[in-house]
Length: 292
Image (cartoon, rainbow, N blue to C red; front, side):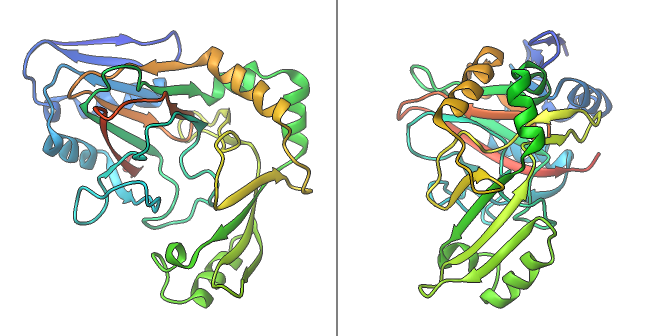
């Protein structure tokens, strides 16, 4: 068994590679955890992992799996914990997974780890893009950094009935649960059954491992189910969005997929996105709370 471990960037990411059909489950769990805590991203390559290996490896480091409610994701497992990525072919800007939601307990909370498995890479492009939120916070212009330190974000949600019914039998139960969260306000039900509510949170957060300041949020993607502004309702200008995007692109680490690759991404430290892709690309994802 021959395993090589080498950095992907000076501070972000590490590659575990094998030139043999080594079982991923035989890797030293302690070393994987130490590298993940330190580097924020692990790419496993050359292990000839299949989808069953993906399920087994992810379970080894998981306390609880999360389920994404986006209808553009298809469920691969009966329990919904293995899903396709968003099924359209467009690019997706950098974002922290589920950072538009409060970090609640249960299967619809915010994951610590995003797991990716490449069953088939795109014929062209299709990279998953990674940006270190710790580096991002340091790299932002001082005036931009000060702006986000002074002002929280507000995600104004419009949750259609089909969404909230996936996690609650009736709106009253869900509204009571949301009302108990300090960062949530103005929770109410519209006449058409849409649940309206606001989530207030900083654009920065602390990493799970190392307790570092990281710029991780969902400012850049557009959404039909929530609107993002500053806490006072002021719009985040297109100019500001572009400055954030340009800074993130300078720091971007693109994962150029090979068949059977598996990646482990720290969602408390890294934002991720993707380049546009083609119909050949087939990536599966799991999201979990870490058991370490």
